[in-house]
Image (tube, rainbow, N blue to C red):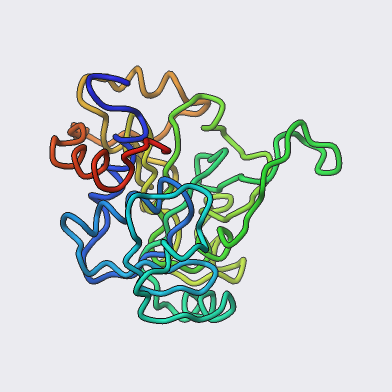
Length: 257
């Protein structure tokens, strides 16, 4: 707990603020889902959540229950129940505006690793669950938002494994050469300390905002590479009393996130 709110609460609130009304969002499990639920209760009541397993436009019941992504509480009042293939096909034809994902590692070009740590795939230092649908989300949604803790070990010059593509090697047209649609890719990285975008020319990660009470130096000290830095930097407001009330009393009263 920091100054009356947790790191998770700040990340959820910051992510929720980025989601627009009357847009579609391909939502990953955990904090991305809670952020979407918060956005729906605030500025985006007609945000359409889309889940990998086929549910479209549910109104998830509260309180949030961890470990039940495909459970009935998450699928309540879905406007359609389809299949994994159809959901990915909708992303491929450009029908999904936002993708919201977590990550184990991210590099300067927004490539995401959620598969393994180490140099040997057969004998990794540590193995993680992997992509699920995250590769398709990062490949085809118009704007991908990544939400993750701000720790030095997570922000690396080059990820150990590219689970989900960002701007790949950063060269012009890299995504297109890999067969991905133009004008898609990573858009924002929400962390427990800051907010990042990506430079339009170099495709490098760009620091655009810092949580009030922290300094630019404190943020950069927890990264293994130096991002582009916007001038001026935005000061990110902490979660409001209203955001915290909804999170703590309605969405996640048991504090599972």
